[in-house]
Length: 319
Image (cartoon, rainbow, N blue to C red):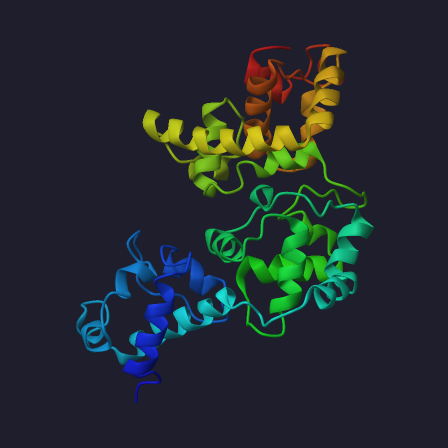
């Protein structure tokens, strides 16, 4: 017997017409909820594909016909997603201010030196989580912390939203490094790690493909996994990374200037970027930093004898 009926579907699809998540991938939305994956793949698999149909028409669609459980699953995803659009109750300013002061996530941010104003656009999050945050007007880490506190008792959350929230709640420094340019054992946010995250939204084969195109020496498994990029595909991927790098350098302006000065004085960009911990993303970060600042990466000073060819000497043709 179906879990949901026509009345519930009509209420949900009406509300979804004004939701910012109407054009978000159903796969992404499902990943951000404690529910099974949406089984149908494809760019067109979004709520907007289904919400114009009434319940009887929905059940007749090729993707749904003969499978009432799938209809229930779709409705369940949309129903849970709508919870993110709720105003979370009427809260007067005094109550919100008090809540913020008691917010353990905000305390973690302060203890670790992570600015509340740090843009969420520079955090390594999935499309679904970005859509959730955008629907609530959340643009910074501080706003994310307040959103998480308001919704934590009202909504079942999953995916990387939950992973980031857990890392912040428990002060998990290693976990934070997956999302933020945070250095374990230190405080504050750091430019090298931020440059490493600039390409994190690309699929792993795409990251490896770009790194290979920039002359990175990849391990045998990584070389085999690297995507072969057509010129137009490479240009498109570079455009995505360039946007992230530009925003990163603008936020970390002081650290950028210090790094440029260090390189001009004979320092090694290679040594600075090694904290990224991934040769492919190090190569991508080096390429875009050099391009944006007019500097060239140099191999570390220990390579000056020429006995050891530095990674970036191969990348930029200098020793």
